[in-house]
Length: 199
Image 1 (spheres, rainbow, N blue to C red):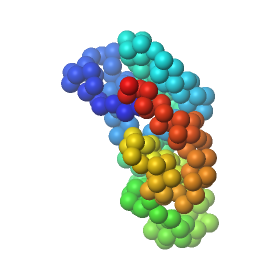
Image 2: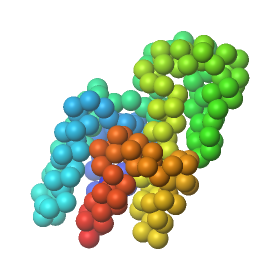
Image 3: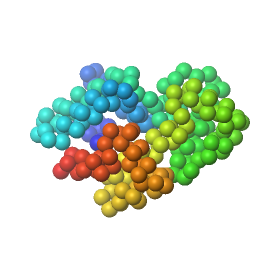
């Protein structure tokens, strides 16, 4: 689902009742992925909106946004929204890692390359990254790629195979698997749902 912050006007988010959702949009600029049971609850609400009339669809959207805004079951996708408390040295390292991924996720990023970026051996880097983010470096790169792919799926003229390769995946089957794992639906279902929401 794609929407602008001012989709209800430029002042609506300033009312007190919208404060949590306003903060959600601020976090969302850095990229956010929802996890655990909350991810499934949000997905269920959003999927149900497809068959709702316009007013009920809007109410359901607010319900989903409020759930996103108030849950702790989320992780940020880059360092400017980093959710883990880190010391200054770690923050500098993580910013360098995320910046590198942001600009190179469309190609293969060898572990040796990113480890060298922060002057670590590969084993030390893998332990370090896992400790700070609670996920592997590969998982984080895939999240960047799927976020990018979800935007490309808005373009009806691009095939899913083309989107897969454009997003950095060299294998369509792997792309489909990762997309479903992160979003809860296949790329084809995601595009189909986009069409229904637009229409």
